Amino acid sequence: MIDVTALGEVLIDFTDAGTSDGGQKLFERNPGGAPANVLVALRRLGRTAAVIGKVGADMHGEFLRGVLDDEGVDTRNLVTDPDAFTTLAFVALSADGERSFSFARKPGADTRLRSGEVDRALIEESRVFHVGSLSLTDEPARSATMLALARAKAAGCVLSYDPNYRANLWESEREACERMREVVEHMDVMKLSAEECALLTGEADAEKAAALLLSQGPSVVVVTLDAEGALVATREGSRLVPSFRADAVDTTGAGDSFWGGFLCALVEGEKRPAEVTLDEAAGYVRFGNAVASLCVRGRGGIPSMPSREAVEALLAEA
Image (cartoon, rainbow, N blue to C red):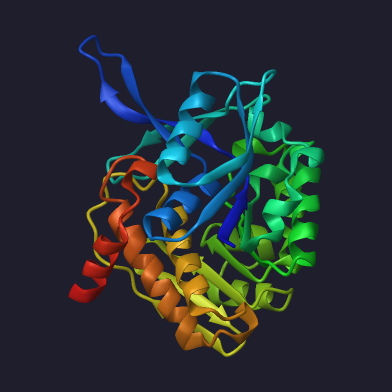
């Protein structure tokens, strides 16, 4: 069995790296993409992971496949497209490590994943099946995602979702809201940011938004609240789980590392999400918080994913 399979974007983050001697902006090539980040976080924590996605037949696609192979992620369903370029994201960083994005994705290879390219057998041997919303922005990837979700549900996988909203990848905010909301009812667990609460529910308050999402299908909802930590909600109620203090260098991959940690703990808890208590869910969130606090101390999402030993050491110190 594979612990977690994720479908979605595998891309290059060209991260702000200062200026050259000539005064020109420099960018550092980092492997990324939210689903890929989650999978590498899981691998560093000792779990098995597989990816379903598409890259271009170019130097960046080859690099990304090599990185995931080196990390031990199963890439049998990472398709190479000879007719589209690997998606690129240029990431500018503020003084406190916060990010802004500019994408080269018109189209990017990740948007061209077709339904016929989704490996049914891979999904059926997975405990958890995870998706974001970037695979819902364009066809044919949107239809491939919906088909994969249906197959995963039929196979009894735990369904996991992180909307990961990027405004400049949607035609409009209205379309984004409609597409991001339409998959919620299928999910067992989901994570969203404080900024995404209103987009997904129309309610800006994290606790109220989580309660609304629970009423639509998921059994566990987590709202990440940056330095405050994360709010976790089950049908027993909700709880704020504080973060671990960290001097952030680069927040790229912070939410993904957190969710990789959460899913790791969920898998190891060996319970279906509907059976998870609020205390247990809070424990999963605490583990995820520890993973994220270590990730943001380095540059780039995948390169900064922490080891299991580092996470356990931090938890032991707290």
